[in-house]
Image 1 (tube, rainbow, N blue to C red):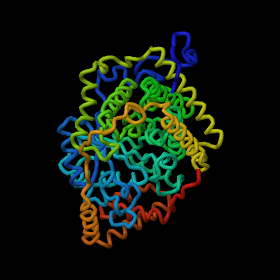
Image 2: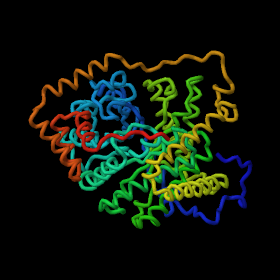
Image 3: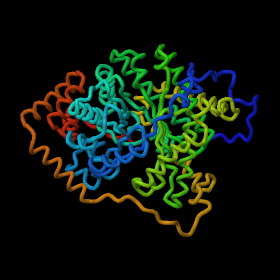
Image 4: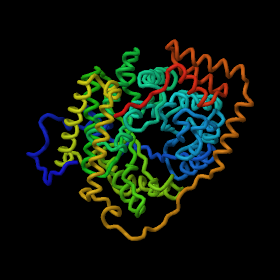
Length: 516
């Protein structure tokens, strides 16, 4: 966070070494499109998913009627970790922080009545991303939707799980192979699908600084691109399929500068490190979510203001897609009313503030350009340091990145505890009593119903077809052939997420967290 009280034309941080440029032109400091939101508004998403597929489907239909232009699916922890709902480790977590998906029948119900050819779907899923994408492809085939008509994103960013979030299954190197299998399959079969959303969001939520968020995210991106190139994929083709996912935090000027710096730094990396030449391969396209870690359980209505300002910073920073958190997310999953207010926040920014009428309206502001330059240069230095220890995978395996995030989180919390960092309603302007608000409650019976559902799927399937399909998954994992076609066969044979994950566990093993 910059504490410079004044920035003038002679104070810009290394201004002579960085190019502001024009919107739509390299290095894309001012945006990836010449007209930005004058040509098309950002995609308004609302991250949602809870309970059963039927309940989440009802929420998606509601959000589509309220004006969202893309769906964003939250999966429960068992689905993220590759366990079926009746696994002992899933007890108490089924449908709690997202929707429970065990089989193709759940996926079909999740998207029942939703036109897959017209709705863009983002799936926040990583260790089991390939399996969930296989399920999405399978239901599209059920609905006779051409695969070329599907649009959306699988997060599929496994590296940040090791450093920030923890929902990994396999060790880093086989996990990276899975990511590149998705790249290769989508290049052939899903031309409008973003194969990965490289996430700084969770790195920031874990406690990193803005500079670390940029540096570590782009370090992971370098590892993915290098793995794709090593697998024989064309950098100009792969570069056009990458997307990024950033956090919109509280420091308004710093956040706007962060988005601009990331865009400019990535354009230079792709051109200078990987030799990319296609303009779209040089462009950093990103989704933004407001900062869940800044939301407070005390005085929760204050969160509406926080979210609005964070969302505005993302728009002024040039995001392509945006999700606003609900005011009640420090207490539980958002209620329908909170989700509506969060969506209306985006719509007010888009249609009432006028900020979408000008491309990069803050461009040229001395404080903004100084923040952009400073974040880019410091993030680049951090990247160089990671490369010096052997690259991203080595840094993860040695716990380097994990330790740096933990230290930043500790320092940030110390500032809150001491009062140096003000949190309105928590360590200043505190009320003796807070107003109670409605909180979404998940019915405990959901778990029992979901367990019965997955067991019914197992009882009704063709055992010979199911067993043969899982054997082909194991064979592909062993011989290095692309896993995606085998996974699609398996889910169509009604193999479950947990069964496919267990098959891969037997081949790849499981990652054990190191002591960072």
